[in-house]
Length: 189
Image (cartoon, rainbow, N blue to C red):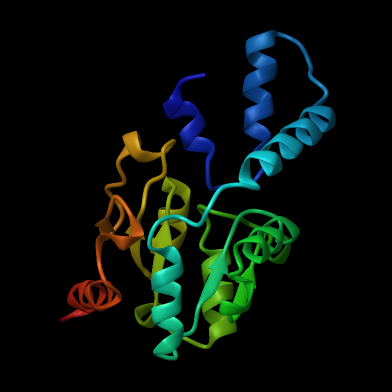
């Protein structure tokens, strides 16, 4: 599978069925999807156990909280997975709302996760900024009407993200004030 094919699946589900379809097509036979899922999840959790928060994330969250800004997670992953990683990173208590695949019928690129997060926070789309690392995530946030910052990861970096309002290499590339100013600039009449 090409990196473009794999990256195109990212952000829509923590376990995209299309990945299994591609594997079965490549092997020309059915595979044990549940078994593969269990092994993949165990390995993913093992690798993530030592993975720190992305550079600048913790600082941006802390600055936003110190200013009284509301924060939410809108993830196509399952709630248990998201909660576990936020807890491991010591970030769980910083979020006012966590909306996951368990909470909506459609995940990214549909806007449902973001719409539900906005509703939970009681804010309008023009009062929010979304940070996303995948094409599906950017599409979902934009469909919800939110100013969107693409922060590509190692897998999605080569794809570009022309639909994002802003693309940065790392969250710490800009200050919170600069992100807010960029969002306000795009909303000006």
